[in-house]
Amino acid sequence: MKMQHFSLMRSLFNNGSSKTNMLSTMKQLSQYNQLSKGTMKKPYEKLDTVEISPSSLQKQVASKQRITSRQAIQSLTHLQGKEVKEIKAKNNVLEFDDGALYRFSFNGVSTVMQSFYHGSGSILGTAFTELGERLGVDTGAIYSQQDVTKINKIEDFFSGFTGRSGLIGSRHSYSGEEVLDMFKSVGIEPGWFTVKSSGQTVRHYLREDGRTFSEKQVLGSRNTFMSHNLFDIGYKQGEKITIGDTDYEVDETGHINLPPDAAVFLTHNVDPMYTKRKQLATIKDQLIKTQATRPEEQVFFSTPTHDYTLDGNGELLETKNLQSTRQPGWWTTKL
Figure 1 (cartoon, rainbow, N blue to C red):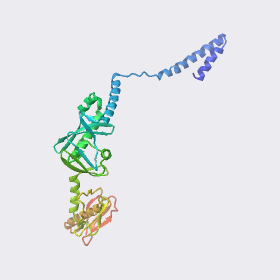
Figure 2: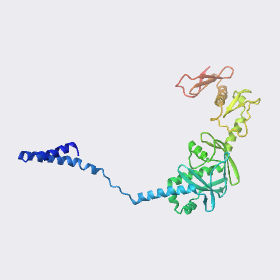
Figure 3: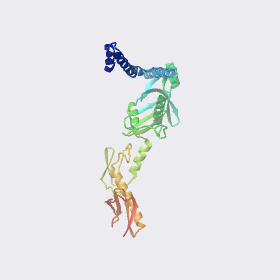
Figure 4: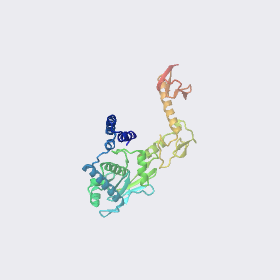
């Protein structure tokens, strides 16, 4: 009770029985009643009635069942007489046997998948029916719809890498961090890795940023790089190009010799000077061709930072673009 309430009550008991005092007391009592109406009911206004609906109770029960089922799946050693194996790589090699069962836990969900041969590789699919029978519950009691979505991504992830295309054409998207985490959980480190399944062996390359490439993509890039004559873009014999962590020397033919497994990614792990020289060589080639069609003009090509033209000897002349308003592209001046 607030102090002003207590003061009024005390006044009521202390007043005498005179008419004046009686009127004063009644007035004070009225004041007390008005205050009481505004404050005495406040504690009760904050009381809420909590009701548990049947649907809410069902959700709670289902949630507990899923937690129990998930724990049971994580401890399964056999399912319908077959051993449940963990997906684990050895020396960056994953192997899936046809018909075998594999457990995988990631992002809060655990599943047991069976491997099947399918055309260009294997398909890993969750054994929903078998798990339901083993646990004695309906499939819906094992996984929520959100869990099923996660499982579909897991299935497609590993199924994709049993084929030669990897994640190309996958119906799901995977962030670089997600790819690295999934591979790390099964023992795959960045670099070349191998997947064996259904009597075939395929290789893929996992980059440090989580991007993956098929063997065909990586070796294609390597072979294209080796076919280029580096003399054409300004390199000299004995100069070096850094690819990854290794320096390679330009030989007497204008080429470098890369190991068979060298992973070449022009915009990722190749010396930036190579890209720069290649761009300048392309600009020079285009300037020569364009200048030949405009003998009475000086032809220029501009980028956001530089202007390019040919000097009197036909060599590329590079100057800084000091006019910030100039648009990149071709332009000419009268000679």
